Image (cartoon, one colour):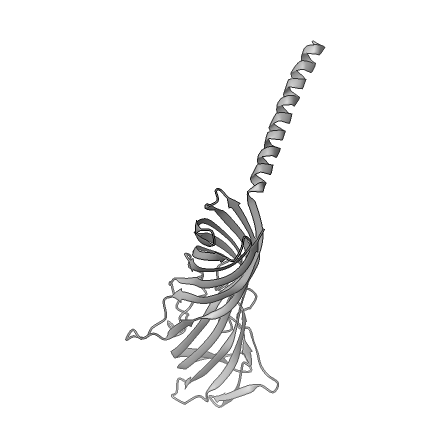
Amino acid sequence: MRRNFNFKNRNHMNRILFVFLAICFTTASFAQDIGFGFKAGLNFNTFKGDAETDDAGNSLEEFSTNTGFHVGATFTFAATELMGLRGEFMLSQKGGRRAYNGPSYYFLYDLDGNRSQVSGNRKIDINVNQSYLEIPVMGYFKPVKFLEIYAGGSLGFLVGSNGFGELTFNGVGPTGAALKEFSHELDVNYFGDNPRGFSVGNPPQTITYKGQTIPVPQTAGAYFEFTEDRGNLYRVIDAGLIGGLSIFFNKGLYVSGRVNYGLTDITKSNADVSLRQLDNGEFITRDDDDRNFSIQASIGFSF
C-alpha cells in the first residue's frame, strides 16, 4: 500500500509540475510580446452640453476650450506585426471653460445672516479643471510600418475637481432700487466646498440694500448660494470612446493625436441648477447631458 501511495503521489506531483512549467512557459512567451512605454502631452478640452437659454431660445451659456496635460504608462500586446491591443494608465486633466451672461438672481446676506433675493444680470466666466485617473484600452492596426491607427474605450475616475473665475452682478431689489454692480472671485473645489462657502475681505466690499450695508464676498466656493448640501456637481466615473493615430520615427519614438469623446453625463442634476431663474425662491434643477470632450496630442516611447 505504501508503494502504491508513493506512486500515485509522484504522478500527482508530476502533473502539478507539468502545469506549473506550462504556465511559466506560456507566461514567458506571452511576456515576450508585451511592450512597455510611457507618454505625455497636452489635452485641449471642452464640455459638450445643453446651454441654458432665454424664453426666445437665445443661448445664455457658452462652453469653450481650456488646456490640460496627460502623463502615464502604456502596455502593448502585439498579436501580429500588424495589429494588437494597447492599454494605458494615465493621469489626465480634462474640463473646460464655462461662461454665463444673462438674466439671473443673487442672494444677499446681511450682518445677521438674513437672506434677500435680488434679480438682475449675472456674468460668470470660470475655468474648470478635472483630474482623472484613466484606463484606456484600444485595438490598433499598422497599415504601414511607421503609421498606427487605433480605437477603443476609456474608463476614468475623477480624483480632483476645481475651478477659478469671476462673477459680476448688477440688478434691482424688490422695490425697484438699483443695486451697485459688484464682482467677486470664484475659487471652487467641487469635492470639498460647503453650502454658503465664501469669504469676505478685510475691510469687506459692501453694497447698500434696504438702507443696510451688505458685505459682498471676496471669494466664493462652488456651492456658496446653496443653504443645504445638494451633493457634488460632478460624478466620479466617466466613460468615453477613443480614436486616433500615431506616427513612429523609429521603433520606439512616436507622436500621437486622438479624440476622446465622453459617453456619460458628468453632472448630477440635484447640484446642476438653473442660473436664469428660481421657482418661488427655490432652485430649479437641470436634467441635461454634460459630457467631456478632449483632443489629445502626445509624445511617447515604447520599449
